[in-house]
Image 1 (cartoon, rainbow, N blue to C red):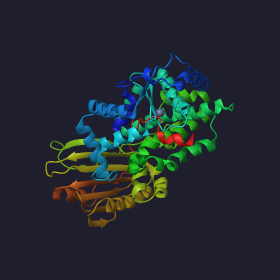
Image 2 (cartoon, protein in one colour):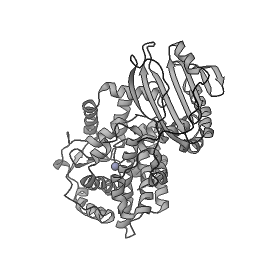
Image 3 (cartoon, protein in one colour):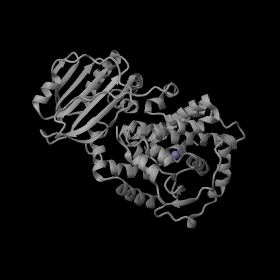
Image 4 (cartoon, rainbow, N blue to C red):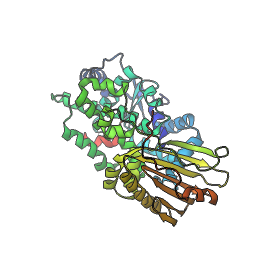
Length: 444
Ligand SMILES: [Zn+2]
């Protein structure tokens, strides 16, 4: 799903803007060369040139982010993503994606590496207790960028949101793993994080959320989108490192994972198991319908959706069974409101059936009104906040159309099944740059 386009753009596009650098010189910068040398020894990636650096205040950052978003994203693109999130019920109806993103990034940013200018920035009012650790994370980006062009790496997956999230997780996971390894090396220990350390990384994000009011009050989906690349990304990198050793530092960029499921289950990455592209229900007139936004709905998205409306345990048990998902938001001739069109494919009829049940709970909870007029095997349909809806289960596919204005379309979508159930699959061929997250500061 296409929640955070801002993230990759920002990751890819920080520019020097208003940063003044010599005025705020701090001793921590004098350690850059030594840190890079150490990171280079751990990773085997050579330092091609020294990393330029600068400083920025939080106020400057806010102005910078606002300007940057205005420059790189059209207002209608932000709106389209916001609408999709609202239709799925992943953010509340009054949610302002642009403002929330700026607020969250301003709160969370402690430092960032600007892939555009290839320059490092630390935030003056960073709440970090240990700036050297922050610096190690950012310099890990700088070092990787000298070898793999990270802007291109993140940009090349922009058209597929779930893949974009996976690429972001590679970037953040690699840098976060390296940051921990650097700390170990400084303490005279082998630079390989232990399972306990990695576990504390996964848990630290939840524990210290209280210190960050903007993040804490953000919708679950926004929180998890922000944290996923760091938490799950670090575990993913560790799995690749365990298998490949130092080659992992190259492999994750040269042969990147394709979807969030490969990040969550590294064995699927090793096996080259790809997500699928299930067919979307046919909603009406292809000529007059206007698609506002469309994209993939991966394991990450399904996890958060089930977590939010059922619980985390169900989410962690069921979401790994999704094999692929898609959505589009369309406006049709027949109605003023946009419709959500969605489909997902599951690894068995049983897990599809389980999600079909779970999705009914989602609809009943996310709407004020959910009048069910058809509830028979494989069909769940009626009227919701946004107009008619129709959810179907067909073999391993679950599909839904929500916000139908035209009764004839609704009747067609709820009619008894005429086509054979899909039992085989159709194999296919997103974060935040608030890098390094302030929330990570707590654990170091
Ligand atoms: Zn980072």
